[in-house]
Image (cartoon, rainbow, N blue to C red):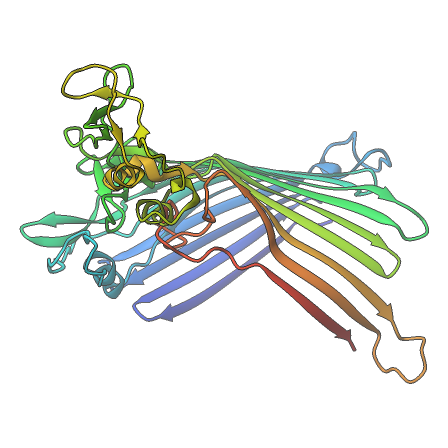
Length: 446
């Protein structure tokens, strides 16, 4: 095959942003290909123009490696790709105003309460430099496929609200690094000539996000509620949960006053965990037999922490099952008496004990690990082409159930629900759990 080269040039614009886009592709021999892209942007939110280049290349190992050419062995195909890119955000003045002055509820503390938004003529867009290597291979007549990607992203010039001279000024305040791995495996363990088949798809992802630099060492990512919030802190994962902890002695035992736990008011807000899961994944099993098919999808997000307002208010108001133990003698809480230094011997009522926990955020932070039966479906496809009187090729009927079961260590809540899908993934503030649904679907193929 002869070498190939293609180029293109495009321009686009929308409210507040204009761009000029160019790309080129180069093919060498039968197995090399390279893509070059350059994007130049102008935005009303930033001064000047900004150029974002990217380059990627791929090689077909099946064709490139002499030992693999023309073979009919286990390996059916293999490709290796690598790429580097630079991209920038587009933040409009309106969005900055809403984020940093925003209309929060009255019982919240905003990032910059009652402060006007200041201007910053030196503001630069957030810039992300990303590098990725991805490889995939198919084996045994494409009955087994593996795809692995490793990436590293560095985002600089993070735009955060910094209070200066009684104004909330959008400022390039720090940098964040993201690195991780993604693995996908597709397999067909069983396939029979009479039409029966069992296929499996598995996904695994692990991402580590760390604040590598930050003006002032820490910045809130949103308003605080009841003493708890999310922050970016230098050297910590992005989106740590901060709040008040139990007051403890050097050995870790709780310090009590009149039998009640105490908040650590001297140490102030501290990191109580990260909202990021350690890893996430999914498993899908699909079974087919002639016209029938059935699939089951499980998903998992393991690790991470979540603050639950539902549990805090439910327990401190006495409506949750955990508050049902109310002995006449009261509760004896393990710890050290603050006045005497001896082991606590003071009993307190269940009601008084839970009321004292309202000021201690640590008590209401839970393991956010969750496994879900995300979807189950069973369907039947009836071919009708050969039946007289029908002008359609097939009719498919399926029963579908979503979010049918959940296993989690966090009581009474769905840890997957959050105040938003971006910055507030570690705060459950009374959101409704994910809806369980069962549906019936009919599809007609003309």
